[in-house]
Image (cartoon, rainbow, N blue to C red; front, side, top):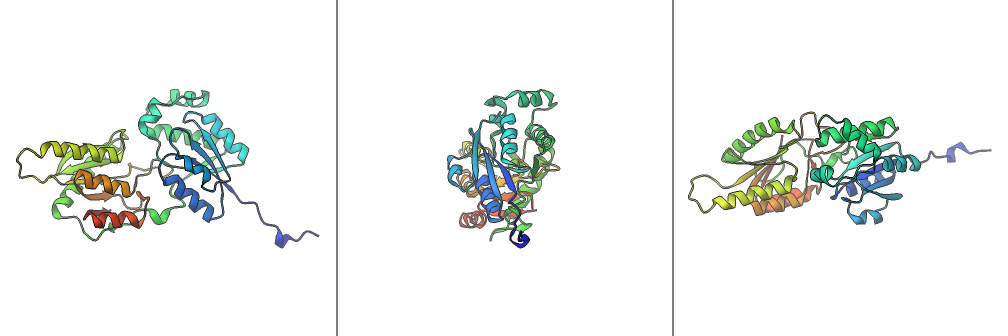
Length: 287
């Protein structure tokens, strides 16, 4: 007689579409800790090679444009739920991509060619094939920035003015898929993020301020970094993230304050980010 008490349901497989950085590794660790078997679709142009040895039940390497192969792979593996984690550089999407027939058809159907439009369309295609994309932060909620001042030092009055101004600029621009990161000094916009990414934007602002340092001025050269989520941020993809590297880049650029959107920005290195900021006397605030 079959002992029903000993029968256990098979583990549900979770698909992970992995971009670059540590984000996919955090998702993989969290998923495995919760008992999921994880099938990784690793993007050849982006994913770190050591994903192969990080404990997934299977790792399939695909090129960025192979949407049909992604779908076929997940179906063959029995994946019905998936998470997209890790950056795919914006310029990579629109320059290096070699689309298969399915992705080419999708690209031709887009009215706008920004990241949100492309990834949203990919998510719809996956859903039509029975593969549901879930929020990329679903397994990592403890790493989302909590409201309030996160560091020992709170923003100064001047930094608060920069934050208020920077948020206003960023809110206007983010709807066009640009400007999620804005750098401000003395309530003046120094740099706006486009396709290059957060760290490169901070570096560019630091170089600009350095080029101005020879000229006499009564204005502060200290930069404030404002990083926001998009209006109606789709938490399935392109979620704002920062890591300790961001703090290192801020130090080199002469940035003294970082403002984030509460519950919508992922702190990839957790408390290590706060410790690095405290060590550098950088204020971090999340609203």
